[in-house]
Image 1: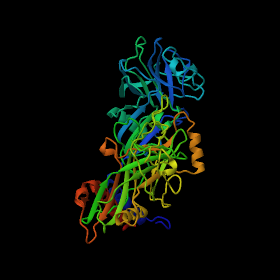
Image 2: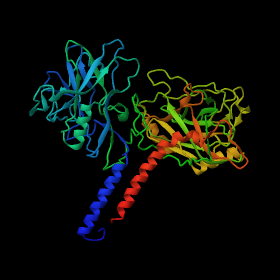
Image 3: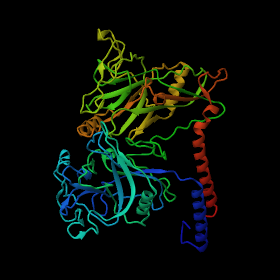
Image 4: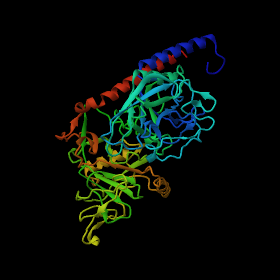
Amino acid sequence: SLFGKKTSNDQYCEMKFSTLLLAGLQSVKAAEVYQAIYSGEEFHDSLGDAVIFLNEPDQAAGGSDLIVGCNKNKQCARTLLHFNVDTLPDDAVITDVQMTLLAAASVAVDEPPVTLDVHQVTEFWNRTSTSTPDGVRDTWQDSLAGTTATAGDVTWKYSVYPDTEWGSAGGDVNTDVITSFVSEGWEGRSGPMFFPMTDAFKKVVTGWIDGTIPNYGVLVKRDTEEPDDARMRIFFHEVSGNKQYRSPKLLITYTSVSNPEQMPSSESGPGILLPGEPTKPPTSSSPTSAPTCPIDADTNVLVGTSVQHATIFLGNGDLSQDKGAFGVGIAHSGELLRGLLQFPVDTIPKGSTITCAEIILKTTGPCGPCKGTVDVEMYRIESAWTTTGTNDFLEVPQPLLYQVELEGAGANTGDVTWTHSSYNAADPSKGTLWTKEGGDVGSSLLSMEKDNERSQHKFPSSDEFIETIQGFVDGTIENNGFMFKTDESEEYIAQKAEENTYKDYETAYRLFMAEDSEDEERVPQLIVHYTLGSDASPASDVSSASDVASDVSSAMARKQQVTIAAVFISFATLFL
C-alpha cells in the first residue's frame, strides 16, 4: 500500500501490476537512443587515451596526438582508448555501434592505404596527466617519441609504470580484430574515420555495459607493423579542442526497456549528423517538438518554397548578400547577421482557414568544426524589401575556412541592406530606408528552433504563426516574408566574441540553403495546412489529405504504440 505497511495482498497486486506493466512495455517497440561517448572522461582513475612506442619501456604519451603506425626512422606506435559506458542502462540492446577518429595530419592521395585494426584490451592500464610529450605534429615522421614515464603511466612494457608489466609487450589484447578501417590518402580536410559495427564489436561493448566483460578499452594498431614500412596516421586526441567534432568517440544506438526515455547526448542528438557520418542517427526525439497538424478529409496542404532571400549585416548599410545560402547569427569575424526569406501563399483560396504552418530549412556551409549553440528566432517582416540575386558571400582566403567569416559584398541598386529595404548604389539617400535599422519586423516571436548542432531546422506551428499566414491569405496582413535572427543581447554577443577567439571556430551562426539551390530537396519549405471555406475550391497545386497520408503513417504508428502502452498501464491500475 502507498499509505502504510504492505500486506500480502498488496504484494500480490503489486506483482500483478509489475507483470502487466512489463507486458505493456514489451508490447511497445522501445525508441532508439543515440549516445556519443567521448574518450576524455576519467575512467577507473585513468584518463582516456594514450600512445605507446615500440620497444620503449620508459616512454609515455597522453593528452597529445594519437599515433598509429611507423615513421621514416623505423619508430612505431599504438594507441589506447578508454570509453566510459557506465551511464548506459544495463539492459541496453545495441542496434548500432561505431568508433570515430579524426585525422590531425594530412596524407598524400597517392600514398598506399593503411588498415587500422581495433582490438579489445584484456588487462587494466592507466594514464596520468603528466605524460604529455613536447613533440610537434610535423616532427612525428622523423622523431616518434613520448616523454619519460611517471608512476601510473602506460608504456610499451608496463600497463601501470613501473610496477605492473603487460603479459605481452605492446599491450594485452584479444588477438581477434573487433573492427577495422582502411585509411586512404585524401585531398583537403579529412572527415572522421568510422570504424563500423561488427558482431564482435557489438558483443564487446554490450559486455562492457552489462558488466560481463571488464572494460579496459581498445587498442588501435596497424594490421602489419613493419618498421621498414613508413606508413602512419595521426589523430586528434581527447583534449584537442572542439570536443564534439575532434575527440575520439564511441557512437552507440540502443533501446532499453528499463529506461526507454533516456535523453540522447546533448551535443550529438538524434537526427543530427556528425560531419562525414555515413548513416542518419535515429530520431528518438527532435530538437523541436512536432506541431499538432490535424489531417482529415477536409484538410488541404500547401508545400511551397521561397521566392527571395537575403542576409543583412549589423551596421553595414552598403553590404548585401542575396545569392546562394543565407546566414543567421554571429560569424567568426564578429559580424552579426540576420536572414530574410519570403514565401508566396496566393495559391491558398481566400476564405480558407489555416490550421497549421511550419517552415523547414536545411543547413549548409563550411562550418563542420563549428559547435556554437544557435537558437534561431523567426519574426514577421512588416515592410516590403527587394533583392537582385547577384551577391554571394565573399570568399575568404586560406587558411581560414571558406565562408567562415561570411563577409557581405557591396550592395547593388535594388538590394536590401541593414539600413535600406531597397538600396540605391549611385545615391544611397535616394534608396528606401527601413523605418528601423536592421529591418521592420513585428514584435511577436512566431516560431523558434532550438538547435544544438548541425541539422535540418524546423520552425514549428504556433498561434502567432497561424494568425500571420491567415492574414496573408485574407489580405489583412501584407506578405513581406520572415526574418530569422539569434539572440542579440549584449551578454550573448560578448560571450560569442570570447568564444570566437578560439582556434577551433566556436562560431555561433547557421547558413541555410535558399531557393536558388541546385538541390531541389534542400530548398526552404513552407508547409501550410488549411480547410476550405464554403465558397472556396482547392487550388491545383496543393495536396489533399490523401496525398500526404503516407507522410504521417509513421506518426500514426507511434500513436498506436503509445495507446497500447496506456491501455496496459490503465488496466494494471485496476489491481492497485
